[in-house]
Image 1 (cartoon, rainbow, N blue to C red):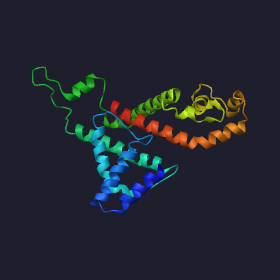
Image 2 (cartoon, rainbow, N blue to C red; image 1 turned 120 degrees about the vertical axis):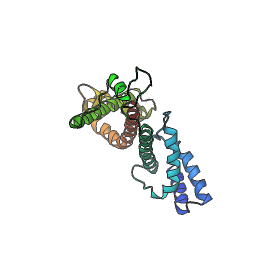
Image 3 (tube, rainbow, N blue to C red; image 1 turned 90 degrees about the vertical axis):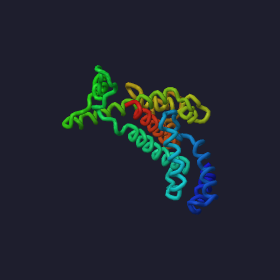
Image 4 (cartoon, rainbow, N blue to C red; image 1 turned 135 degrees about the vertical axis):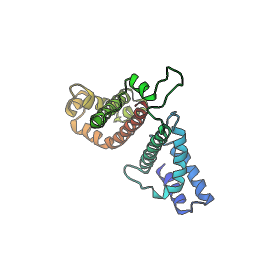
Length: 235
């Protein structure tokens, strides 16, 4: 996959912006990107508007892409997702601009303002002197939300990524179990204890951990990133 992507990126980067061949290479690249693991997808109302902007942006800026470890595909997905994330937020912010807190939501004698509705639903706009604490509170809520989503993902392993990364001839000793026992238990276990339970040497388990951790970590970071996007829409 990396070679196919590299060839398309190279073709597009060498051609002028108005070249039909560049447009064709970009179109093929867009199809490939949407098939890559970790590419962010959503049914949110702003997602498809942002996606349209991203493909237009990609067509004009593909020559600026830089490959980083562990692979071109992972680098490309991170590059696209990062820009997609901010475009979604930008669209949402623009949609919400111009709503005054004092805007009356109906015109009769029982008229109520947007500010009053927000207050009644439990949201209190922060005072200037309390803004720092308010931001900290929101950040803590974000972290808890993402951590919970990440734990749920690890426990369920819906993409079979964690369970697939197991010791040869020992499918029970996989990364789902390793992560759960190393990081998610109330009393985390040691690699030595885990190795003993599975009847392998600590060195064997450690080598397996180091060999696979980079890819597993990148995958979990993407899961956390996507969870962060979801949380943005809930706040």
